[in-house]
Length: 389
Image (tube, rainbow, N blue to C red):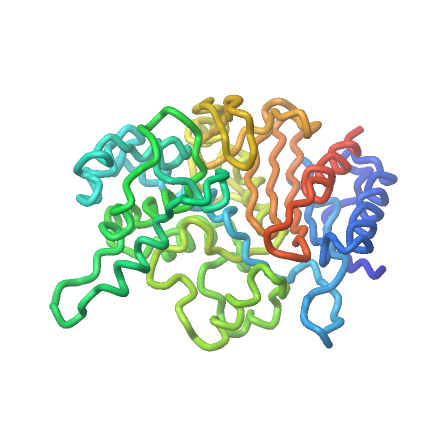
């Protein structure tokens, strides 16, 4: 199976990584592709800020008749990895003294100023502890409600001739909340869309522009953005998860439906995400560019909450979560206990292990939406961490 190598700074041995485990990683990817679990895999690994393994294996497209190989610089929609960028933008506004973590969302967005939403703070949204309804599929409830459906239903009833602007926030909040704040961990992508509206209200600019201008551009993330440029569309990895977005972008449609894409709308590459991880590893600075201060990074990457979690079949054990980052201390991983990460559906994962100075960004798209293969995500990271010498 063809492996296409990307640019690296050094060999694995130069940074204390066992060369044989690099080979084991490629065998691992090849087996999962042969078993039909993965379409392909792309990856970028660095230690101490030096990229030592970077490449891609498998198919670029799931479409019949397209047998092109996946390349290391091919783009993907990174889904919920976007939340790290959004949390970073919020914390930049905290650093600027414009907002506070304990500030009620209702002080910024008036739709949140009445019960039961008036107790929700920016911190609650950032840590998924607001009590708002979680994403569809998080909990085993066939009667679950969601904010997206509420907005779509309200828009169907909306009379544009009335002259009143459509209020998507008020429409969404019609379904209420699931619980009080700070009682359980409920993964809410909509909460991060709300944070996008907060960014827009505070700055007077598009949240997309703020994130691209204040995070992606300073870090030199040339392949990280919200709206796909027309000249980049042929570089996308075409997967069953997001092929519709690519087609909509080709037609010039708004893939965000007029909402902030701050919950899961960005595109990127493994190399760019690895640079983001290194910026956090370096206390908010990379190659002389500062996106955050050291103390802010410490705040984001240490446990901020530990509340009962029932999402995706969890048994109620406390979920440790930072500000925009998941704290990874679960049994299925061999990371150091200070490790933090985030994932995105499809599947994408960024992992930062400060003790080992190791940053891993991998794209392992499953062959069908709705699938989850732990050996492709968790197993991949364990193969990588086994190479540390």
